[in-house]
Image (tube, rainbow, N blue to C red; front, side, top):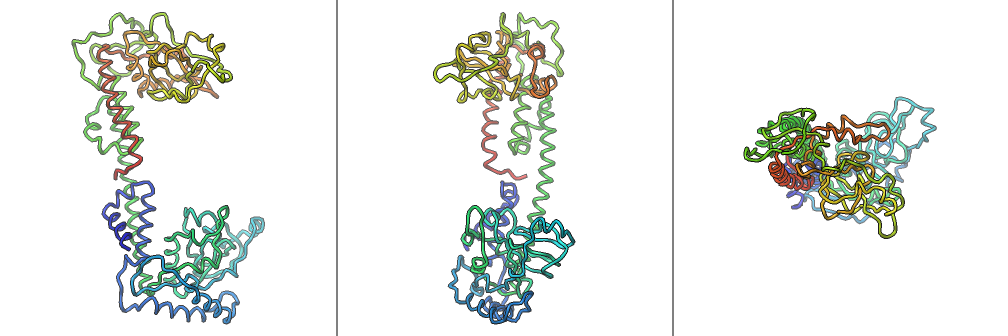
Length: 522
């Protein structure tokens, strides 16, 4: 009881935080229900009597209850005697004025009235009456078996174990029930609601048999120990739970609205940031970055700031790119700082080398040796994944010397999984690339790491998407890539941008890794 109280107190003090957690709402409802069936949400009212008084009344009333099916009084007396003879465990402490009883001692079982109908039979009997299965209404038929409020409890199905939906629910009106749900009546409607709350709160695995098809038969259902408060307190318990659930629903709805507003604000702020207006986003980062998606938007915004000259200060003493022929380069869709220029990708290439794609058909992987060859799955966003690189037979690779890597090139995916771009380190000199990867040999006026920043920016990604060609297998033509415009700052500034961006990306990566494990309330 102390543990349940501690859980309830902790969650009551941090409702919004718990609701925001993955599975938090379900956990909150479970804690409230657990507290309710332990007597932690209600106080004793002496005028209501005790659980034992209620149990005595129910035992007599069940024997006299008008049956919805012909079951003799003698049979009911034998059933009652067997229930009383059972030795009953007490799974957890309850208030002193409560008592314990097996589930079967509190209800009148009507399973004998159920009639299953096959899909084909129901097809010819569509009607106005609900047809219930293990987890609720599954069809409608033209007749009914039951008339009035009764408690239905799942008899079989995976839901008995995984509890994705309630396993106990009250059916009302006129309806039909198949043989996958137990049907029970109670002396008082308050008890029916209380028993539904109780069954939906506890772990039923000890009473379930089978793994491929879990089942809880009538005997096992009847044996479940139930904490029994007085009738008046049962009503107050159910009301207290419903009241708290209603509050949770309101909080969830308001938080969903708040999250929607915050997400919209984040989108606008990061979009403004990418366009150069970073003041609002940077001064409200703790409120705007609360999810993995926010971190991804932040990375895009930082890259766009970098390629616009807005991430680091310009230094007038730094020499602009010299000896770079930028004639004919198209204008960029944004302004450039002093000392920067616009160039095409082709204009920043290493002399005597051109952009090329690699090995067209990799062929069977050799059992030994071979040339490691990067595929699009190995080229990620701003990094390489070298653990899965496959090898190509040298007799095939020798025809693609033009894309054999020496280090310092930039590789970018132009077919297959797009969005991958990375610098080639000298440590993998001698590798080659597959056809879906383009090798961009960078001249000495551009730092390869800065070109990676440009290629991975939102600006350049939009440019790629606007120029993709193909239907079944889309890709980027190398001729188009050569003519795409890029910004070129002084070389020293390029390196300062790369250093600043790398430091910020490390923080973003750390945030991206930790955010799924924590919750930041809205």
